[in-house]
Amino acid sequence: MRNANILLVDNRKTTIENIKKSFLEIDSKHTLFSAENENEAWLMLDGTHKINPVPKIVLIDVNRTKKKGINLLNAIRNHPDLKSILIFVITDSDEDINKAAALNLNIAGYIPLSFESHKLNYFLSVLNDYWNIIEFSSQK
Image 1 (cartoon, rainbow, N blue to C red):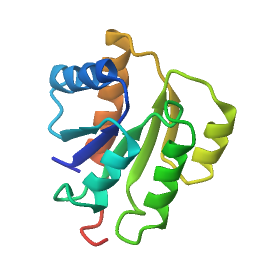
Image 2: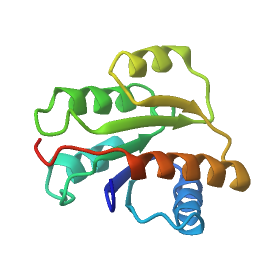
Image 3: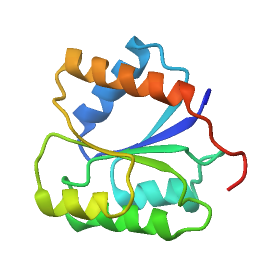
Image 4: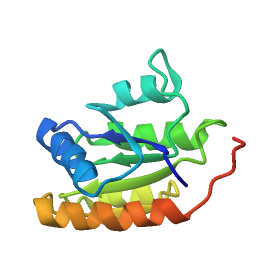
């Protein structure tokens, strides 16, 4: 998959900036959009600020906003045009309740992650390699 849109959902500006910086450092060809909360993310997926084409991948930390993150995952999985999005939960927190809920919503991965620069670059580099070899249907 080349040049896919990716949506990052996290309420920490520092994390968003660090991930954007890592995308540049690993020379990712994917376009990264960011939303600071689930409402903003939903508007970018299916609302007035819709990203075109719709992102193929969502990165989210569901532990930052308690139930709202899980609610967003549930809304994506129940939407006929969004349910095939690959969702990766990336977090520096270990909330078993959210972990179980996210895994039950068929996410692509639940990844405990340190946001230290070298670890973040390595992690995103591995994901970038993965994203570059998988294929998506052009249909919804």
